Length: 302
Ligand code: SF4
Image 1 (tube, rainbow, N blue to C red):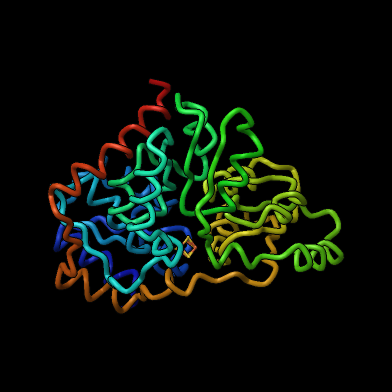
Image 2 (image 1 turned 60 degrees about the vertical axis):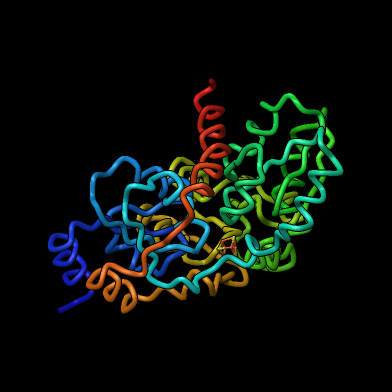
């Protein structure tokens, strides 16, 4: 039986919702009930009634789903699918920074582990980061862990002092101006769209900068027929599916190996066995929920 049919049978038998991040293998995205960015997936889990959720993404994403949906069974098919950027936060250093800078608000990207969220005043996504930082009453901010996204926020928020953590996403950080320029020589009419996790010099030459959801929207709304895209290469799957008449080029084919640790075989095994379940201490869940809920309120304009 082909993968997609096995998934369909197991979804019905075991009351499963299958969600997949935009950087998951195309075959997994096609079998999923919902595909999206990390926070979009966590919110989707909240809206749906299924008792069991197979979460295809990296560790911090599955954790966020648990934090917002502690009554559901969140199953992560490969616990070793971990985000190296989220792991760049040293908790001892963060706690010392907070002690030395009591007037500074800690803003953490949702791409952080639950322990980091617990120490944060508020979270943000790549699409609401500027709005979240602007909403804070403090003049001093620590943004973590992604220095590239932090530098992007600084372009728009000039009236606050923003300290940056020295973290970065290896997949986006290696996207180079040179590779984009080489692609532009072959496709001079192409529109350049990049994720704000890219280096500042890459952001400088882009026509559009946005989250994965923003890139998808721009691709469908723009009159351009060719796009040079600066984000994880698997985004091409959905971009091409939703825009069959358009061309998408990914200079350097940036790949997140951690996302690819989740394979169709592991998804099926988890759907059969309903494990491994993501377990987080109840007290941590409660503390980590606060910065996420505060972010949601800012998003609603409360
Ligand atoms: S693409 Fe970057 S931020 Fe996303 S999981 Fe991979 S390493 Fe982490």
